[in-house]
Image (cartoon, rainbow, N blue to C red; front, side, top):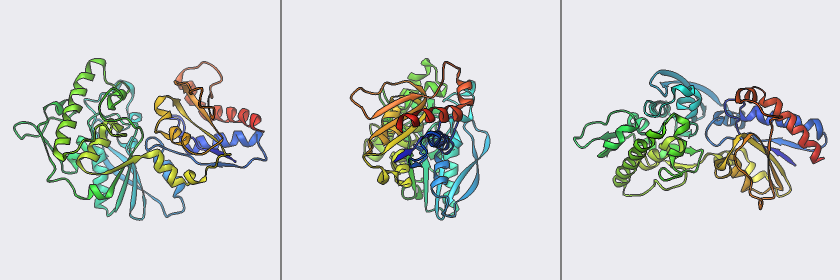
Length: 367
């Protein structure tokens, strides 16, 4: 069997549309082979799209939430509700895709809207809120979101810290007495990357794409280190080194350490929800892909999760390939869908067309 299971091609094509484009190309040259599609997400872009795809027969409804956007403006986002369960995507509240590159600045962006969305859903009677993390433009450790939920971040005089991640350097104590008790039991955090909060592969590895300049990194590093130190003293437990804690600028750490939320890989969650984890067999061929293949893709994102499951071969269709597949990994092949050199906007405009063309060619090889 051939399994088509891509994730989103960011800012170009969602996982469902990508799956259909690949399947259409394969079917044009593999008319007698069984092909099944399983669009996937790691919790970032395309998370709600995948939830909607897999729960479409469960009386799923879309609900509009009014929250604070990444730069303080009022904006609308949506949540998917299924009974007493709700799903939200942080990328639709504080995502990089919401800001042009020239307006990205981690000192001025906030996670406040995420806290507002969670609180609204809990107040509406949701018994479980699944939060897909990924693609954020913030680096505040989830502090602003947690303040909405009742946490207080104080300086040495007991005064609230100024807004923004720079203020974390003056953090002296964290008052959790007012934190909404529902958060611990009713919120599940799904991280998209397995980076820890601190260290050379921590949350700051993504700071440049969020608008941080080289001179800003020292300030951000000092703030996150102080945040981790005070938070871990407050709970008498070290979490900053754990996998996934650096997701979404440290939001995963803030909710795990201070609110006691359960966290897990968004890719693993989606594989379970889709049923693909139990579906794959050793003789299956899997065709996946994403916009940019890098080291992070091969670890705990969708592609990394697929690599750990049974299959005969894994073919990755990507817009850009920024990492080599290890020679010892004979089951995995990465192929660029671009027919030749072109700029990013040109490539994104024809992503579906290029996916279909490449899949057609691959189908001829698989006959």
